[in-house]
Image (tube, rainbow, N blue to C red; front, side, top):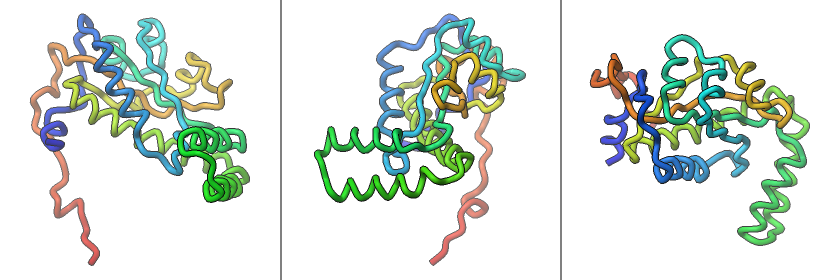
Length: 208
């Protein structure tokens, strides 16, 4: 049950550095990211799978995130496009054609997409692309829970530092969020703590 998975997972604060994520579990999580929905199917981001200890240490993590990242088995850095370009949208169109075949409707759709996105303020495009990465992040966390892998989403890092370490600017990318993966270790103050969430009444407004 989905609720069971969401109840089991929590934002792990302490990882066991001795435990490494098996490759099949990692691949299941990465496949969930790959299959996650995005606006117009653009997938305007890349994910960097970091296992190198020195690189994990140099991502610019802040506070307690530093130790968690260093001890986690993997760190996934979600890096989104800095803007939409004609070339990038053309590559999405070409990928669609390679799977679905050529379509006049698709041609018109992607032409319209370029007309909408390409002239737009790059800052607005970058924000839009970042939101797509967060959709995939959610699917990654659920997939991790299904695999009984602990995961922690982190924004507490220096994006400029992470961008520099991974060479993202040269690729037209910006780091947005980091997801650590591994297995909970000893001394995690959050393990077993009851979840604190808004009540349904406070969270949802039904508009009939």
